[in-house]
Length: 305
Figure 1 (spheres, rainbow, N blue to C red):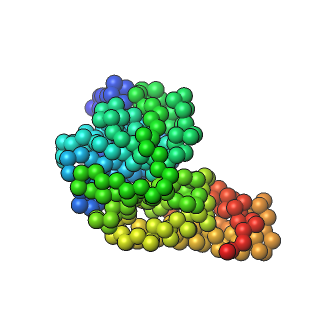
Figure 2: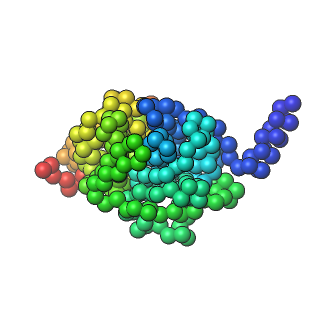
């Protein structure tokens, strides 16, 4: 019996691709999210490790981050269609990391959705680009996934109205998670989408970011009146949603600066600053040491303004 079930499962995956088994979670009025795994992208999770959220805006959906590939996006829409059978008119991408926007091709193909995104996507990718997800998943799993750039590049604060919803799309002035991050605020609903500037339930990857810029961007996020915050990764959407990120980066900054003041060199920084009080958090082993080393490089000649 077990062998028959296994063979059926294998044949199903081969024929139809990866089954993401997606279940939308309602996080606020008219807002549902698919919450990604708090782990590295892999064949086992189909690259699904970031959050993708639908907002019902009267007679269409607005999507925040389209996910890891065409197949994921298609299955997400099928799940949302059962709640409200609406088109996706608008897609807003928070930043250029591939787990957040490779699903654009589905929404462009099916709905010709209008895509808003930071300029880095249009600048850094061509139709021939193959981001990391193309190396992790095979050709069948990446079928129909293409590079789809922004229709509208957001490089200054932009207000849009879709149906009965108002959106503010705000570019960060500082390098934070990347050099070109957007946050999205719904003033009437008091809902904030932070992208990967905020993560909870896992250690962040700061490979393209800045400790100082992240802390300054968190101040910007907290300058808005929000009751719900949807992070780029993690399921905490309440008033404590950004506490983990703020605590981690604040302590990382303080500890690395103290080590530098004490004469610790780059060769020894990861032995001195271990951040072990976070070792119970997902992805600590994969990311923390790199974060500490990168923080040293950023802060070595830093002077507080």
